[in-house]
Length: 96
Image (cartoon, rainbow, N blue to C red; front, side, top):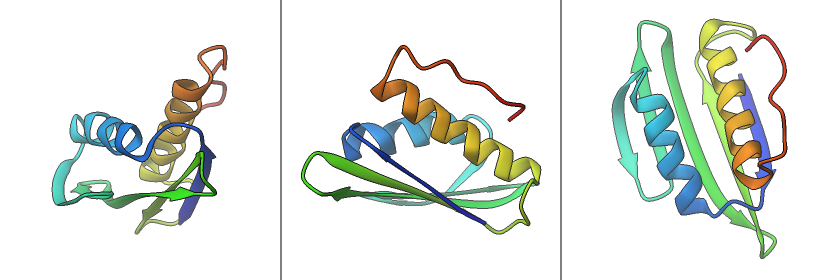
């Protein structure tokens, strides 16, 4: 599955938060300037960030699992964390 989120958070901040968030749950496999790949018993996940349109960052997460797997729920949860970084008033909701 592939998920994305456009945010005002800087690419460096988003990638650092991804390393922190997923690194606590999965094993780091690959580390590049704007890309991180993680793996574990749940599957593999790749986080990519890129500057887009001047003030925005596009955060893309790809998993090797079908939709609604535990890894996909974790990916969606991370996108909620990124949203909260940009808008601290945002209240995360949902079962992921």
